[in-house]
Image (cartoon, rainbow, N blue to C red; front, side, top):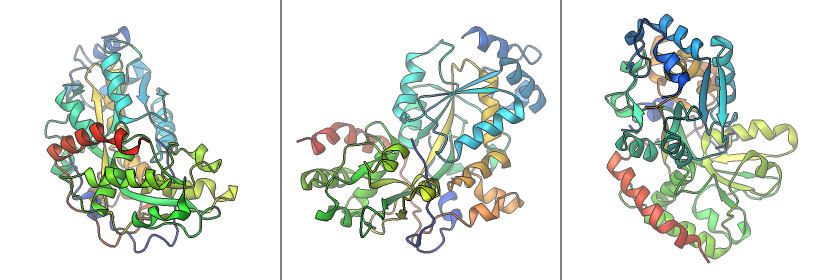
Length: 389
């Protein structure tokens, strides 16, 4: 994963975040863990489905502090403001965070849960794309847990039992280094132009990474496909490959800075953040929401059912869904799940909200779990063939 934010004129009107947040897609023991489970009057943090199960927030905080650690995975510090979020959690509670494989994928997170079951180095929590949250839930990998404001998360943005729930989201965007590329492409159709040979890159492999998978879905919508038919998106990237425009290098801040990936198809909050990140380094990173392939998506939080630090895992979720945590995502140019509830309560960071990217026709019909599962299967079966040769 990687992040950036651009405030370029390419964002045409101001995105109404409510249009994204109200209709978001739903998703459907070690010794350390033992110490956490014994910490609240004999009640188990490992099986707690709310802070109330442990006697309230104070008891949850005490149990988490006793564990003293939190294991997260695939969270780059410049992705949706996760660096500041992790620093804020540590400062607030004095709990160390180990962030493993920050440039990994959603599939890497699922693999870590399954391959490290019962190990102290297993991830406590995961941040997953919708397809992976759905598959993980079906595999029985997650622990049900409802944060204090669970009822304020729209029903379409959460599993009813609290196995997973949307945390933040954004739009698929196209960005480029305007000092190396002129003019910058603004639509998927533009990407096929001969002047963009070897330039168009994705943030990961769509069979493993949600950012790349979502780019393929956006391309499908731009080329006659639908939420039930992602194949046109795969075919589009096959055409990019045949034209010599597809760049197999996976986008990261380092590849952008080195000039290896001058055009990136990635989440709006990532591309937007790069504009800020590279402004002082002579990189004019410009971002557009492609009018021919408008697609938005949310990531999802879930707790590993066998989390080695179960109290810290639950406290992390409480932190992320507090006003501080949700405004933290907003500060990284991502739309938080509780945007509308916080706006109504007067706790939303209005200045940060005003900087969200613009979109003329908000994406409002999100894929169902079944559509996402089917599309993921098609990508897994057909992607490699499409871009080979």
